[in-house]
Amino acid sequence: MNSTIDCDLLVVGGGLNGTAIARDAAGRGMSVVLCERDDLGAHAAASACGPLHPAVPSLKRQALSTLRKALAERENLMRIAPHAVTPLRLAVPRDDGQQPWRERASRMLADRLAPRQLLPASRHLDLLHHVAGLPLKPQFSQGELVSGCRVDGPRLAVLNAMDAAEAGATILTRTVCDAAQRGGGGWQATLRGPGGAGTLVRARAMVNATGQWATRFLRSASNIDLPLPLVKCIRLVVRKKLGHPCSYLLRDAEGRSVLVLPCENDATLVIGDGLPHGGEPGAPQVSDADIDRLCSLLNRHFTARTSAADVVKASAGLRLAVHGDGAAHELPHPYALRLDRDGPPLLSVLGGDAESFRRVAEEAVDQLAPLLGQSGGAWTAQACLPGGDLFGMAPTAQGVLGFGDYLRMKKQAFAWAPPELIERYVHGYGSRVDRLLAGCAGMHDLGHEVLPGLFEAELHYLIRHEWAQTAEDILRRRSRPGHLLPPGAAAALESWLAATPAVRGGHVVKHA
Image (tube, rainbow, N blue to C red; front, top):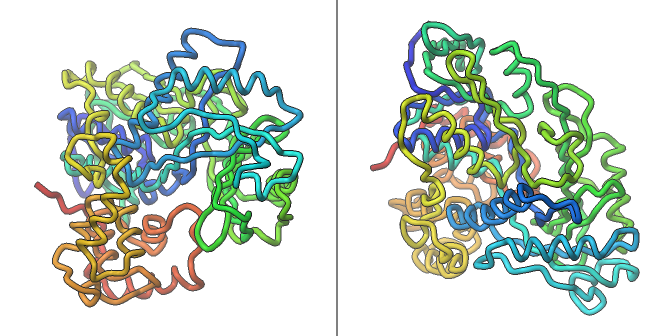
């Protein structure tokens, strides 16, 4: 071994759940090491969250309690990260094959349970006299307008890791956990970093936050077999303008949600979730059948025809389905925590989504803290993620409701730059745009424009502060969901990185 690290908690997995747990634990005073075999948030979904509502009439007190917490969490996430979690209104066309009374009853109940400060209640929508109905077929004349939020999952994973590092956590990207076993009163894990460098980590407890690989890791570390099905989320970017910048929530024949969102360059982002996946964990392929299914659903609702030829980008991700096959279920509780106390603790995170990560982390650390002799309480609901402190350190509704005012203020402060560039910076970095542009007084201070709108100053920031090491890392952080890259973008970035070796390293510069 090249080195040895002793810590309270080893977190394996640098997705949303893993980075949020590292952040929460470090903020409570624990010594934390996090390892991620790829880039932070490389397998996190960048998507939107549709409306939450329970199955009616099968309601239980537990379901109502869980629903209330989930609805409140949406507004809480918008407060702590107003630049990465933004409100969204979705048009839901009413399908003759559905049961409208059930849908309306569910949403009325959700409206009663949900906080009303940031996300408005649902309302009836006459699609014949509303702009959202313009691209729809005439038979979809009625519907509802409901609230959701748009979430940048990879961005949130990086922000959680930044906050964890600034609280003292050690973040190791591109570092594989080769082996982990109990021994010596704790966990002993062998980590293998870039270039084959080995590190022995001795931890009092370990968290398995490996996402789709969680059951496999649990089996290798504790010999516990816990089979859970995998479901697939498909994201298509379609070069097809629907006629108006509205967002839609559609239902397929099995009742699964399909989100249709406008994105840059007059394209449309289509997200279908919950499809059964019979293969192994990894990088799933988007099949022709997947594309045809989503195109057929679009063609059923919209007048503009969409075919596979219109799909300019297709990707897929996997997650564990803790409630069976991933279809809609009664409880809006997409995760489960499994604590193995047969020796030093091992907590496994099963499932989860882009809007439950903070609650997952809080519950996980609440379970581990007493076992590690830690008395610090929950804190993340009252602390902004990096860049979220637009109007002060504490999260407030003003960060969401006043985001436009903050954006105008920054455009005035950096009037020497194009307004659209400052807008992208503020959406991407929030208040940390000031650190990104520190010392810049004109466009010449941003350095060479490596790609359209991507200057060397931003590249240096991503590498020094956000662990970006490759062109793919940089593009993941810079691009919004549905963004289409110019041809040769990755090659141009790799050439720049190769010519600028001094910037490689991917470590966070800690700030007081």
